[in-house]
Length: 477
Image: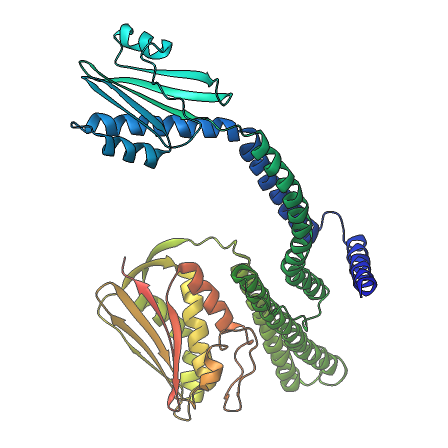
């Protein structure tokens, strides 16, 4: 049986040694292990220092304090008698002798006390003759060959008390404690090494896993999973934060791919059209004025569409970079919105769109004119694309105590609730089968969001099966 146990211990030690060899010297596991071991050694050294080296000093200080307490109790008892003296001596483990006023009382709590039965004893005689109220003495007890602490005090005119405590030799006690501490130190060090190893392994394992998963994420692998099974708040918070960051990076990567795909498509379509109609003018319709003008108009329209897309990409890039500088100025919001509506007048004339604008008498604000113009333009353009068969677009300004609420409403089929939180994303693919026209680039609402965020304006969208309302708030100046 013992040999089997020894073999198991050897196997365990070999596993431990192998694990240590495979661990980097500056790893978290090693650092935690070394810290716990060093802390155990510090505690052991502290105990050695105070329990062995300073034991004698502490013992002497303790006995001196007991003498002082006994002296205080003697002073506080006006009518001293043998019973009171015995009780104090027994409680404090000391010897007391009271002398004077025809009273002699002596009591001893242990055999090591030095009693003052002889009236001519030198210490007692010297104190009585000195006229002092109290005095401490250190003597060697000749009977037991140990140090004795004496506290002499004057209680009354002719009443004296001599309190003494014998300090027991501590050599044998210190030897016993030293031997015990050697064994204790060895056991504690072994336990510290073993327990420290498992604690460090438990703490470092989830962090190591998180580190490995983070490397996967850095390589573009979005299947990385930072979920861990450990009951440590900070590590769980870190894992949750990294999982959130992974999800957001995954969304960003998808948006990036969608953006590139859509921009490439939107660039390719007008370029293809421009090339095709230019070739048609060159090869077929150059001598037919009517056809040539139709083809050239198509080229101009596609060029405008291309310019619109490029401008939207530039605007979006500028607002997302965080380097946009706002030019704040006084603005008449009613005039600004009327100017935007004027740009869509051709739709009123040719396609029977109706722009219904309601507002208070006066709306003066402070904002960046160009950016707010772009916000209103994009919101109205979005409403044009998705309004209902009645082709009505409502623009409302509502005045509150401290702000203006601007709303742009269409009468279309609305937006699904699950799509509302994504509606501001670039090229977000919601159900757009009811889209009537194609006057935008897919970046308009994202540009609106960034401009309003730069201004610190509250914004949002509400939708039902009777249409959608895009709104934002502007503080009064």
